[in-house]
Length: 185
Image (cartoon, rainbow, N blue to C red):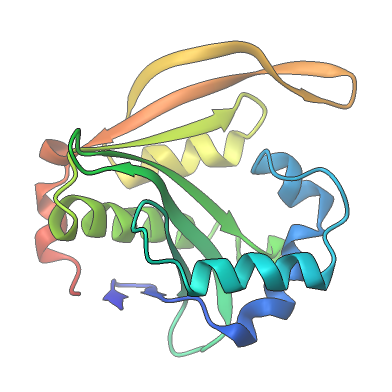
């Protein structure tokens, strides 16, 4: 577990399945995360969660996060496509329910996963992909700390008859040395 000021990152658990399935069937969540577009059955999510729980390849790492003292799962944050030689990974986050957004929990979860990526895994760069309409994600990125705009995939993501840009942003280890004092593993 990774302990921060507002949240705890922890392993996902079998009993997280109902929340995960509810969130992944929320159309707004799917749009914001550029996720799977079709209905997600409990069986599909059960298979997905079982793969996450039994994953041993260490190229994709998933965390659930809680806001203590409440033991409820607030969201999921992940590091994917981890390249240990180049020291890079991609990051995605989902705060499941609307009422938990805009409270600083997302920024705290990103900082905690950056701590893990930079100082536990010894990565040097974490990349995010944000749809141009996802204003909340851009706010979270700025709250996290220094973020670098690396590029833009023009008219890359289709939704509701329109194509949207995907912004590629990155966090670099040297900009986040202060995290060593803020988190424990």
